[in-house]
Amino acid sequence: MKIGVLALQGAVTEHIRSVERAGAEGLAIKQVAQLDELDGLILPGGESTTIGKLMRKYGFMEAIRDFAARGKPVFGTCAGLIVMAERITGQEEAHLELMDMTVSRNAFGRQRESFETDLPVKGIEETVRAVFIRAPLIESVGEKVEVLSTYKGEIVTARQGHLLACSYHPELTDDYRLHAYFVDMAQTYKQSAQNQ
Image (cartoon, rainbow, N blue to C red):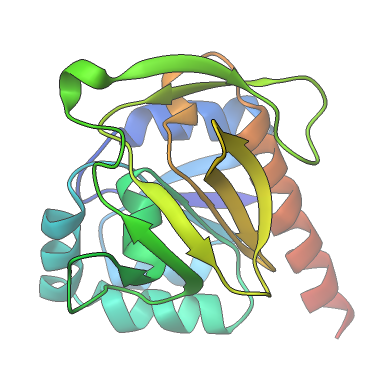
């Protein structure tokens, strides 16, 4: 199992470490051609506007849309969630427009309002340790999107088929179970593709 982490910005090495702890091979992705060898792709945190600009500059927009259109799993964390959303509050243009959701940037406030919490996530036994840093919020989702967790009534983890997104940074803790959940998604995709 090969899981790539888009290496334009953000906590790339931490994601790779979590992927490897979850039993898959983690790869830093810097070129579009590398996408072909992957079973799944993680879009890490950082600054969503900057990530969007870099993705456009290096040809990743269409390439990742094609990757997702083939049914390959994509997982966005924090800014990666914003990049995956079809709609961004207060912005005319979204980025990849993969998931049927409306997101709000920096919904939990600035850096000083960052916090950690234990979060129940549907499909994962026991709570997941979640680090929120200038976190975005999923304001609303379409009917194909399953809400996996909420914090104080607000949606912070969601899944739409082979697409997964969360508002927080699971890679900044020793808890790699959300990465393991994503690796399972990629494993399921790989098996179904082999059976076709």
